[in-house]
Length: 439
Image (tube, rainbow, N blue to C red; front, side, top):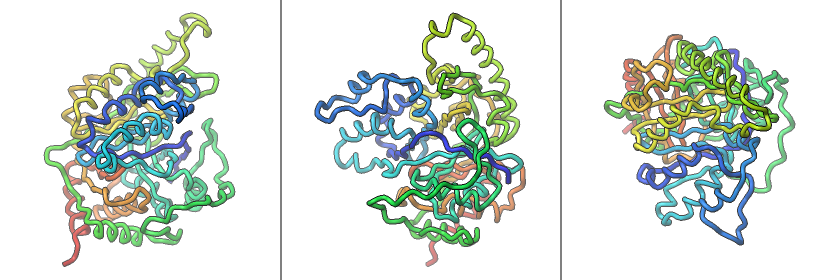
């Protein structure tokens, strides 16, 4: 395997919101999508409490911080939960005040991860989609590192506890086949820095315990399915729910002095990984051409000092942006939006939402992909090996060909294996007996 790995800037929080509280949280969800109007790094004074709206109105934004706070964002609405992955500053400034205003019982049903997470962007070439999921997750599972895995149209993203960064680098280096990229895109040696000193307080490790690097895939699979059976996790498929994986059109945002906003070209990150197929990369590239033209017109008008400072929204197709908000407001049955630095927006959608987006999407909208859900609400955020165990067993038992389009979406309290229609039925037949307790 030949994969390029880079750590995105910032620390991130995972948020689980039950579906019956979606309407309560729709405003903060939309708020993290809207262009920033505040500096999230400046805490409010505890001696002068005010409403979240007043706090956010009062704070100013530095454009460099914007890029760091927008390095990665995933909003997923599924039949099981609403899941958010956002910069920890957004979680504190936008979600925690709403959580604090809820009645005690309702507040207990919402979960914010205690640990902050780091995000790895992975671009892999020469490997089918099914193999990518397995090859990217197995080294970390062997090292006992809990992860969340998000397949998108162009790239794969892995979320892991920020405290595990040293162990992540070590695990990938030991496995081989990974190239670590620096913030500016250059390759750097894959030699891990000394491990950080242990904190004064530690959280007890979640089950299962850390694995040995020599742990086999069969052992990882057996451990994962044993844990799922003990927690009564059963695979489910929702009738008539079909998904499509699409991308927004590429737009070249302006580059600031700090280099936070970088232009995305047709041959950028999309050329490497490919979320569900190489053909989509071509469509995205076409969109990039149109975006680039707009960027040239922008740079040609007026002097640098006369222009408004660059904003995160400059890198988005405003038509697509409006459609995303419209779809979220409609309380979709399934919708997952991923916004990542240097990638065009990626969407995994209920097929019935396509009319909402018109021609603002690129990709194969005719395919039929079926999600198989695993409700993990009874498991802690720190559980390890689920993605690798489930994906590995399916790859093994289904003998998936290189053309297979298996992808995986981790949300805060659930997982979804996504396959074309026929393959999803085979996968369900494999998973059901494996997750059935013996009498």
